[in-house]
Length: 168
Image 1 (cartoon, helix red, strand yellow):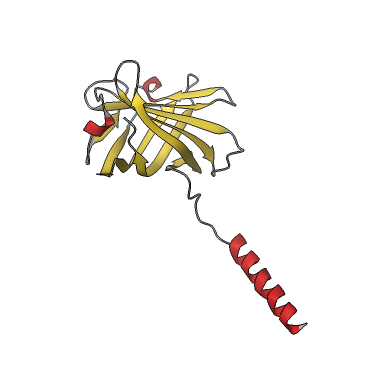
Image 2 (tube, one colour):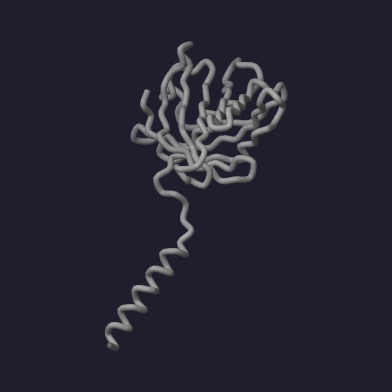
C-alpha cells in the first residue's frame, strides 16, 4: 500500500507539473503580438506574386489554438524578385506607396470577413528585417499597422520568425 501511495503522489506531481508549463507553441514559425494578443503562425511559404515580387505567406491562430479563428498573413516585397536575394541585414519599410525597398502586408480574418491592408493607410509605418540567413532558412522580425476599409486599425506590434525555410 505504501508503494502505491508513493506512485500515486509521484504521478500526481508530474500531472500538476505538466499543467503548469507555460511554454509557447513549439510548432509555429512566427510569433506575433497583434492588438495586444499573441498569435502563432504556421505553414510559412515564400513564393512570388503574379507580378514577380517575392512574398511570404502564413496562417495563424490566436494563442496557437488551431480550432480558433484563423488569420491569413501575406507580405509582399516590392521590387525583390527572389527572397534569397534579400540576404542578412535586408530591411524593407512598409509604406503606403510601393516603391524602392518597400513592402506591403495583407491580413485577412476570413471567418469575420475582415481584410486589413497596409496600403489602405496613407500614414502606415513599419519594417521587415532579416537578421540571419543560414542553411536555406531565414530569421528576423517585423512590425506594421494596417487598416481595413472602415478605418479600423490592426497593429502588429512585434513579430519574430526563426528558421523559416526559403522555398523560392
